[in-house]
Amino acid sequence: MIVGSGGREHAIAASVAKSPKVDKIYCAPGNAGIGQIAECVPIGAMEFEKLAQFALENEVGLVIVGMDDPLVGGLVDVLEAKGLRVFGPRKNAAILEGSKAFSKDLMKKYHIPTAAYETFDDAKKALSYLEGAKFPIVLKADGLALGKGVLICNTLEEAKEGVRTIMTDKKFGSAGNRMVIEEFLTGREVSVLSFVDGKTIRIMTSAQDHKRAQDGDQGLNTGGMGTFSPSPFYTKEVDEFCRKYIYQPTVDAMAKEGRPFCGVIFFGLMLTADGPKVLEYNARFGDPEAQVVLPRMKNDLVEVCEACVDGTLDQVDLVFEDNAAVCVVLASDGYPVSYEKGYVIHGLEKFDGADGYYCFHAGTKRTEDGYVTNGGRVLGVTAKGKDLKQARANAYAAAEWVDFGNKYMRHDIGKAIDEA
Ligand SMILES: Nc1ncnc2c1ncn2[C@@H]1O[C@H](COP(=O)(O)OP(=O)(O)O)[C@@H](O)[C@H]1O
Ligand SMILES: [Mg+2]
Image (cartoon, rainbow, N blue to C red):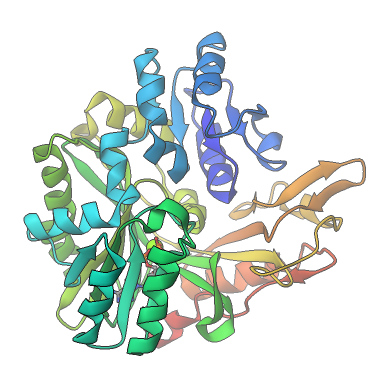
């Protein structure tokens, strides 16, 4: 059983479906696309007791939790208490994502490279700290804020306004009860996903996402407009540094703190002139990253997840295809502000049997007229290719297979690779 309802869960379901160990997949609550390969059950990701009851009644052998909210809220603990096998961190480990103040303090304590910072639980103190600060500066709401709780402020005025937004006006709710103010870093961003069994960590191939709505990384932040994998900026040298100073040290730090981490750790890295630094951790697959990383993974995903649950990940070697993948998100025009829904989606059948091409659903709905749009991010179109250039050409060709009324996409996903 997979818990979640986005493109990430569709990508997880597609990988799980390839496993010979699996004869039935449930997804709660799932979406229209996931419904093609799994049985979607109408239980919300935050309905812990109902999820547990359903899993017990249907003899679910493994639960994979895809989303951040239920992980941070303790779904894994609830399911484990009923004797279920669950892939994902317990509440006391998901805090790695659930509290930015926690993760910064952890990094400081264990000398894991990250931006210099201070934490505040009082707006007044934060405001007076800003008076002597260097700009630009980065403000982060402590808790989960749907990827919107980070403000990059160029001036003192902007930063003061930001502190008020987060801590006084509580724009992100209780996520803003505390905040982190940190040094602004410059460099290339890279996302690295990993599997962790509490002690051992296995690194997946790298990826990079495009969060801004418009070409040239302009416009508002979104849940992600596209991704590519691998990142050409993630060199062997960077990998060696991160293995030594970031990945294993993070896993060891969590174990030392009595918070062993089982599941996926997502490392958001900035490759600065002073070396790689951690921007943030997530406690699960990134949504757009999963859509380019999982299609390239040769391992049986279920076997890897079970090794994490059983603490035998040291016996697993991850193997990725020697190629590249690009995912272009097809969105509703106007996203992330306001947009219309309910347009019929044409052309989805072109993906049937198209080897190396995937169409992951996010905001879709099944109606009498077929699939219709039902969200801001509608579909993730992924294509593989022998290298990034080819994968990008393939993905943009496949993006034209599909059409709907207010279809919008960026046209420069993976373009940064031309500079590499
Ligand atoms: N210290 C920093 N310096 C420069 N940019 C940053 C810094 N921290 C975060 N960012 C930018 O803000 C984005 C969001 O921050 P992140 O810490 O990943 O939080 P979240 O994903 O929860 O919003 C990052 O992807 C990065 O582009
Ligand atoms: Mg992030």
